[in-house]
Image 1 (cartoon, rainbow, N blue to C red):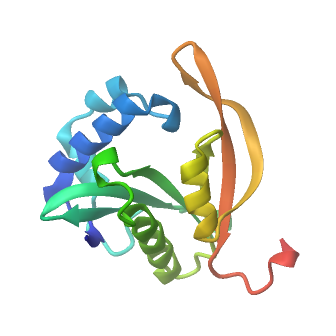
Image 2 (cartoon, rainbow, N blue to C red):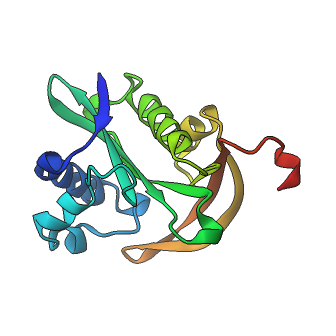
Length: 176
């Protein structure tokens, strides 16, 4: 599988994959399928900017020229927070799982973050109870630092989110 940065030309495939993710796993995402489906294609294209210092970057895994998984990376722009980036929108459909794609996407996101001047850590949230995703993130170097109760309303229920971070540039994490 090939991992590459998505470009505006991929917006239709990216949109379709993410709408599938929101529909099948509403507890895993803070956006709903209805609100994202209502967005114009131009919104999805803007998320896939090719500018070197774009605020967001989305990586895709391709199998036989077919988009098989995605992971996004959002960079902080405020002066005091520029050392942080956030992994968002990670999704690999069932039909492409158990092939190492999720791990390769996370590793590619960490490499992209590490290549950005000044970025020292990547953070994310994962739904409490999603043991497979949490294990993947932990195996890639993420550690949890807290739980946000009732973080996302998924229909009539609420789910909690585990906050995690990965050190990609601090020489001594005991200073944190």
